[in-house]
View 1 (tube, rainbow over the protein chains, first blue to last red):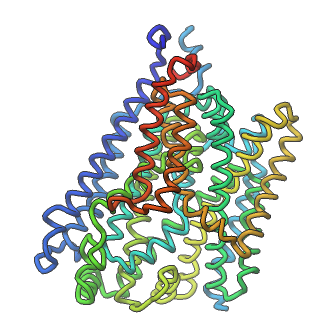
View 2 (spheres, helix red, strand yellow; view 1 turned 90 degrees about the vertical axis):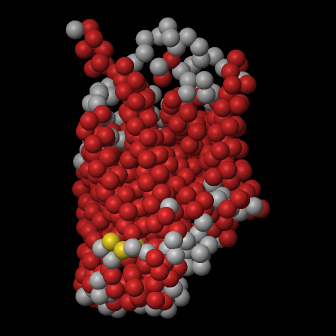
Length: 98
Length: 482
């Protein structure tokens, strides 16, 4: 494998970073979803449930707030960290010649 | 027949028909026919990309089956369904720009084109084409049955006539318009799914007397309905969590979804699609499954889960509005079926016929073949759906998890792990799908997890191990990837 000798395409570095952001978001999403659903809010007996907007608190935080939080995080991640790259090889080649 | 309900659905079918027809006129003659027909010339913008991914993935199960189970299980099933929010961002982020760039370099039109160039192996291609044709053909037939049953139940016409109407409306625009027509109609269908969900959710909350009233009615009937554990307390955290693989991250391995990740125009379209897709998928999944749960106090005692969604719409909405809302499950089914039909057709024409039977077929022949194969496949599905053979129903059970277990690692590791090779890919596909079928038949839901979990882990281990063991045999052919 002499991948080191070959010129690394800088766009792939961006792509790999963005893929890791995706994995990070999924892990966070899962932790939030799981924690509120099966943590203290959801696992207590129904008589002791708290309610928010009429929904059981575990459900409100895990599914409703969780969805809104994820939507905001996804927007922030895309706006702050995702970079515009060209998908065509030729254009990039020309740019380099110049 | 209730004309007030049926009229909006007929208008919907005609609208889809017109859009499909219009899209076929827009075919860009500067591109090669194959790129145009099977990939829409890689010109999708952000909104259409988000909608076609969501609508292809969201099928009869999101609109009919899912709410039916939620009706029985309560909020625990909505919790489970929310694992699907990740499909909105994960697929595009993980395959992402690397897949888009590499697919362009390889000039890949289908997922299998990508695998073919990546692994340089005839067996990878044939195995992939075979599993796509078999599994997705049966998945498609199952969706057609669902679509026809829905028309049958709404209009009261016979099953065969309903199937015929459904088949004609889908086939015409797929055959003449290809991917562009599929994506455009998906966008309209996706919008109808989104709006229909919101209308019905609001109407159900009002009819039930507000959320606090509905929740206390549910708790009075059975307190388990408002816990995360299901109506009988049997939804364990591990079981529900394992759906994050089946309907969450594993979706990255579904060919009908993956192919869309190489169809977009530029990185801006991808960015927009991630945002729109997440919001739309989340709203539909949360809304539709909540509708199923909230329907329970309003319409108690429904026996057949699949009828919950149509019955509640007819109960809480004026007939004409119910017709519009019921176009949503119709749209969900059509938008899945059209993508599957085109994908199976591309596997036959591009991946098998052009690759191995007639590599130098002329543009005209390819054109005739593409139209012809798509039509023949459509007719075959129609005939199968008239009275579905047991084999087909059996195969459909494996189509989702079986394809995920086959493709997830050859695609994802193929993209990011240079040392992955054809031996790893072939054994991983066989191990994934094989173990999925085996476990499904003999040890369903092992250790309390969904069946798909172990095959995904196994195919990962096999891919890595075999690639490392055979590493020296395969000359590095993937300089294009670095």
